[in-house]
Length: 259
Image 1: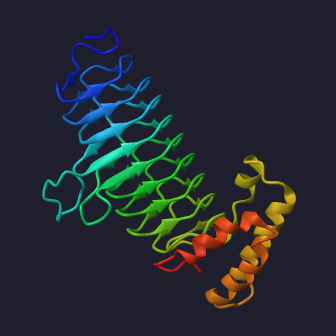
Image 2 (image 1 turned 120 degrees about the vertical axis):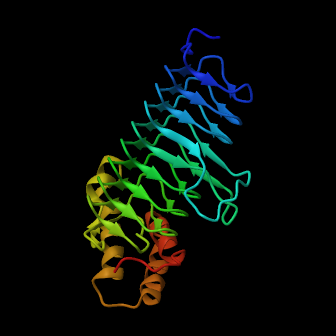
């Protein structure tokens, strides 16, 4: 056994670990788990399979990763969890595998910062560079775009879509889709403007932020039907390409956007 794997860890013979994976005391690695180079698994963490974990992730103690979905329809079908590279998953997080009623897998992208007690349910698809503060909770089938931020104790109803660069305030309850760039807060969540500070930190210049604000006003401040707002924003995208992700989040909404 590698010096990087604690002798009390329990690792299935059907798991595949890269040579430099670290596994802490009393951690359990189950059948069908694949873990990439540079990843560390904390003490008492449990990783069930089928689960594929990429490189340079850090999973802290007592996390439960890749176990069966919390879905009464689940009948032990061969579904899986796929985690990318460079993610931080803190204490007591739970991330479930998918179900055959959806794509059959839960996906977490790269460079996500997942704080303690976060729950990511079955069939969620999470992009990259997201931040989920303590106790944020995603129900099943939720899709999250890159760079989205979830405040502590925020919750998202099943099948909702959270757009790229969106910001969900602390304790917000989200039962509708949140368009890209949009800040929401409250219970139920309502729109509060755009995530200007987050955009500045990611290098959006003042003109692009102004354009996004203007597009937000078209949707939320001018009393237009959503179809009318989409038509107006479509005319702006050619000269303001930063609006494309906002426009796409409006077009793709199935549950309806927060209004």
